[in-house]
Image 1 (cartoon, rainbow, N blue to C red):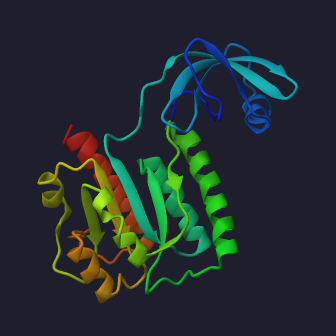
Image 2 (cartoon, rainbow, N blue to C red; image 1 turned 60 degrees about the vertical axis):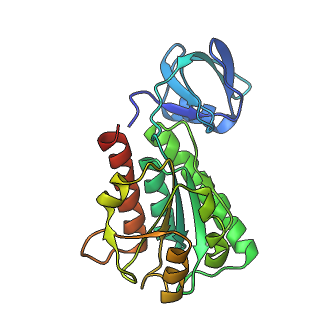
Length: 248
């Protein structure tokens, strides 16, 4: 956890300037955390900028903060996108919270042939809105400066057309001859990584075949069969560890 309380603002941030927290953030700072004028905090904009700051004055429900220098970045040195077969609400919320804490930068809900969650467009919109709020709160808690993008749900077939945007596409699966993850990462010079996380029962044979034909690398996450949210958390953690601790 960050050593200072962290607050989010949509305002453009610049060093040696004054920013204002919105009513919700201000209320949390004053009424919940009981912060006093002059106390040290961090403020971030969700776009990769975070600043050391000091609490200022409360005026008409908005708290002013004085921005000093930029805070140390806690972001990973790689861009991780997770394309996840959506699961039940509580499990999906857990997944989003944890992969945000672990450094993922994009989360794409995907409807696969074996997906159990298939919603109307209206219900998808409501889900995405809630998931984005969870991502924002998770980033505040763990001290990140970037809030991951959570995009609209897409079909697996439309996902295939996005592979060319990435340096490395991983598909953990039992449905193809796979390799250990570490050798695949060691031979890669990837910066933009797409990780496909399947539903209960894995991707269908057709989906695995199509993904591999388009260049996805089938990998194993070990001998045990993992649930969707577990696989997402494990893979994100392993990628973060490799690229931050092993490669750097």
